[in-house]
Length: 274
Image (cartoon, rainbow, N blue to C red; front, side):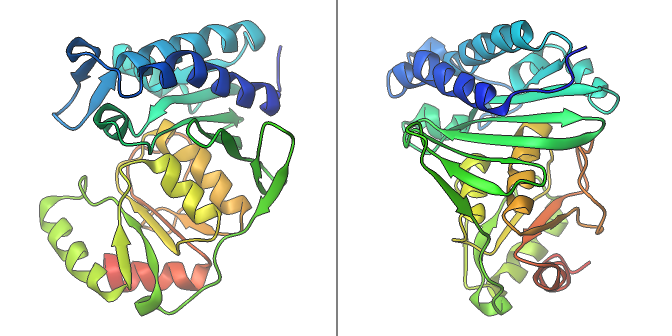
């Protein structure tokens, strides 16, 4: 049985799929190339589907014993999600993260993959097709910005600051309506709040030390497994809203990431008010 995935090969596969199926369609999508899924802002494009098809075919050839879990595969076969918790080895892929931006012609999107072994995330990759580089991590090996020429730069999360000086991103759209208003009001306590509508770039920004927090409520594995591991390997602290560890099978319970545990506690108390 294949028990390991060569992360450099997987990273190169994401890049090849982006160059073959994603970038040629950027700002060139026809009317029939974009469709809504669960709601008007939840989109899928031909780029998503074709890139995932290419990544899946190659991943299954290279690592035939690994469960392949892609966002578009799950859209067609939702029961796949339930297999992740028990998989000995799994590859989780988001072929185009930030599809809303991609469809709107905004150059803030990415291709993400994570490797799961024995119920934990052991590797994460976020490829930026526009910048042509990866942010990636293997468990215990730190977080790195890597370029195709072999250059590598170690990433570190920001130093802690006071609540009123924190800059970061929060996705509040999936919070319960009554809680959303409360949290948005509490976010007036931080210095700046933004949202890229692209977890790939939000995680890259935090791992690079440029912001102090990320906050999400809906936890689909292709959106958050890679970025959470990368953030932790860059030195950040990550946990669900109740303080428990975030695991591959978790789909709810929220996720809060901060430079350290003390900053996390402040955000949980002052912003989430839990």
